[in-house]
Image 1 (cartoon, helix red, strand yellow):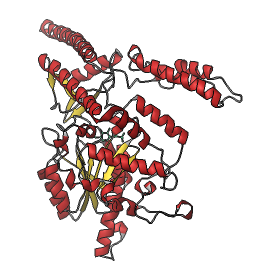
Image 2 (cartoon, rainbow, N blue to C red):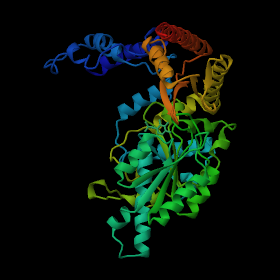
Image 3 (tube, rainbow, N blue to C red):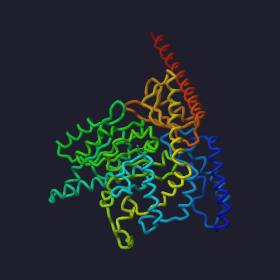
Image 4 (cartoon, protein in one colour):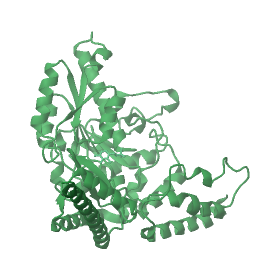
Length: 492
Ligand SMILES: *Cc1c(COP(=O)(O)O)cnc(C)c1O
């Protein structure tokens, strides 16, 4: 394939993509395939000779599309959103073509410098305190691949910082003896990746019980700290969540922050989904208390129209990250690295290699503009409230958690078993797609506003499907109860 072929096929691919997204609602949102479906549809090994793009594209429809869950369908209401936008696609094409590996400034100066400035732009958009911005000196931002990586980096940096600090006070302490006493905390509503960071980081990880609104406050943390310190443990890390995955609850930063600062506990904030909403002034108050944090992270690849992967992380003191795991082999060194002006992002992350991901932030921010991005967030929140209102109006259903952003947790009044059956019947029809969660012991359906193309009519359609499915289920349950009580009456 040469550049002439690429010009032609590239344009055809653009048409294919535009058609795919224009007509995505005609496809069933969830695929009807069995595990292992794909292997029998393609040969056992790669072809020895070249094949034509037409044949490959035909197989995309034959082999791939039947097994795709269409995350950008307006009937997709599962998990949390993942971003899709044309400016972001375009930027990623360019990033692929430049194809640099920007591990150091010298490895591709534009890749590093645009990232630093984009993290300042975005920090500004959400009114992050100046200490987190690179233009200010000590702090700065980095693009990680995912929120999970950001949490892990924060935990590992916090671990190293605590070990170094204790060893400087007591040089006889070994790393192993400190490690065995370190303990990290998060809410019992935190994402599983937080617990996993503790597993990978080989430290104890404890959950703090959330309150009846699913958020953690200062008292609960204090209690755990007192108990653990009395038992000889060393608290070093707390991961607060803004916008929990089950119900989009917010931990109370203004209570938690001062405690962490006082106890020398690294405060990391995971706002993976909800963070994007802080570009709207009316939601920014939910970030109050970020000034107490050591690190803060959210995913523009969830809700800010920048395609995966783009998880933005800021630290107040970049030397905490850089100093934690510095390696400097000769082949990665360059003339400017000690100047202090520029950044070598390889020290900020686990892998060495990194793509030119800031291009897609730059394209999206410029081609949408902050106002359009704010409108996008507001539309999703408004559609969530529209769905919430529909649930409220139907007395068979109840809302299970306060609706703050684009997520509605709801259920049929009744048993978990009834709601499990409802969810199964809804998803089996493949007209819309939802996932559940547990809130306490309660099985709850999550309705997340996800697609860039979702409109009021899709919400209405989804609700119509849910209520019809529920009515049928309740009718069956009623008949079963009747026949069961009939049998009991007959037996008497
Ligand atoms: C989605 C989510 C994550 C995981 O995000 P990744 O970028 O896929 O690692 C972590 N925390 C919360 C609160 C989330 O909602």
